Image (tube, rainbow, N blue to C red; front, top):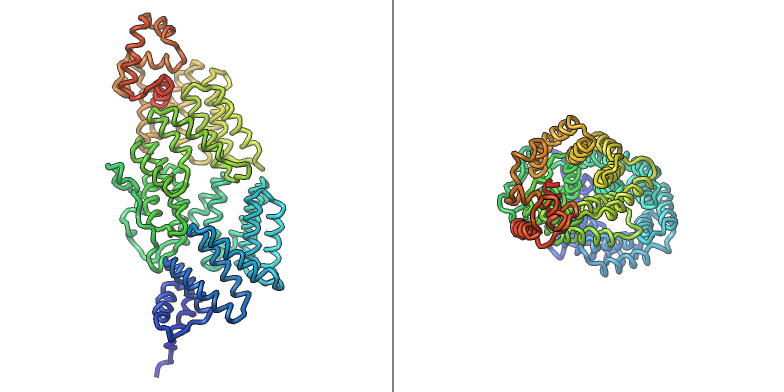
Length: 587
C-alpha cells in the first residue's frame, strides 16, 4: 500500500503557505471557508488573509483579517490581535482609507505597547520611525529604528532584522547621512540576495530599496537592484508574456494618442507575484534613463496591468515615465495622455508636463507648472532626484523665455543641492554641470565649455545617452562661439546619431539642421526664411524697432511678419513665440 497522505484541506493549506505556494493555500482555505460548520482558527484565518493578498484578492484579505482579529480577541491573545491590527492598518492605508488605517494602528498600539518585549512590537517601531521621519524628527526616528533592531536581534528573526536595517537606512538618508544610509541598505539587501527572507519581506525590501536608490540619485544601485528584483519577480511561465510585447522591446501601437497607455484593469491574476508590477514600474524609469525607450514603454504598459489596487502610485510612476519617453520622441499628444493618467492616479506630472508645454510653445504654462511643483516641495522632502529634476527643468524653461536671472538661480540651487550631498553623486553632478554650462552659454560667458565637458563625461560614465547627446548640442554651440567649427560638427554628428538611434525625432532634426546649415533647412511651423529671421531676433529680446533696423525693413513690415508668425505657430505672445523658437532649434 502507498503511504497515506492527509486529506485535511486546512492542514494542506498550512503546508502550502509554509512553502509560499499562496494560490494553492488560498484555493484550499477559500473552499473550506464556504461551509459555516467548518470553522477556521485565528491562525488559519491569518493564513487565508495572507494567501488572498498574494493571490490578488485584497478585499477578501481584509475580511479574513478582520475575522482573525476577532478570533484572537476571543482567545485573549493580544500579540496575535496586535499583529493583525497592524496588518489591517497597513492594508487600509494601501487602499486609501486613512481613517480606518489610523484606527487599526491605534488598536495595534493598545494591544502591544504594554506587553513585555516581543517581535510584534517591531512593526510599531517601524511605523513610529516613518511618522517621526515624515515630520523631520530624525532623532526620534533613529531611536525607533534602533529599538526595532534590538527587538529583531532578541528574537533572532532575519526578516525583522533586515526590515530594521532598511528602516534605519531610510531615516539616515532623509537626514542627509548618505554614506551611512546606503551602507545599511546594502547590508539589508545582502539578506535579500542570499534568499534568507520570506517572500513578503523580500518584495517589500526590493520595492523600498528601488525607491530609496532613485530618490537618492544613486543610479548604479538602482540599475543593479532593478535587475535583481525583476529576476526574483519572474513569472512561473515561459515564453510570451500575457500582453504579447512586454519583454520583446517592441513599442505598442500608438498611432492613436488616446490609446497610448490607456488605463488598464489593475488586478493580479491568482497565483502571480503582486510585487511584479511595482518592481516593473521602477524598471521603467531605469530603462528610460538607459535609453531603452521601446522596452520602457512596453514595460510601462505591462506594469499597469500587474500593479495591485493598493499600489496605484506605482502605476502612476509608470505612466509618467512613459510620458517622458513619448515627449522626447516628439509624440506630444500621446505624452499628454500619459501625463494625464499619471495625474488621475495622484502623481503631479512634473517636470515632464512643463517640458511638454514648452515643446508645444506654451511657455507661460511651462513656467507656471514647474514653479508650482517646486513650491509644493517641503523642507523635509527626501526625494533629492525629484527636486534636482525640477531645478534642471526650471533652468531649461527660464532659458527658453530668456529669463537669464531665473535660469542662473535655478542652476545655482541645483549645484548647491549636488554639493550638499554626503559624498559624490554622479547623477546630481551631471545635472548640475549641464545646467551651469547652459546658463554660461546663454550669457555668452567664455567659461561654458568646462562645465559642459564635465557634464558630458558624467552622463557618459552613467551610460545615460539622451542627456549626453543634449549636452553635445550645447557643446557644439559653445565650440562654434569659440570659432572651432570642426569640433562643433563632430559634436553635432555624434548627437544626431544618438538621437536617431533613440528615436528622439525632434532632436535629431534639430541636429541635422545645424549640421546642414540654414540654406537647406526645412523650417518648422511653415515659417518662411524671413519669418524665421524675425523670430530669432524676437527671441534675442529685440523690439519691433530693433528688428526693423537689423533687417532694414519698416516697423509695419515687422508687425505683419509677427502676425503671420503668431498665426502659424498658434501662439499669442512674444514670450510663447520665443519658447517655440528655442524648443525647435531656431535660436
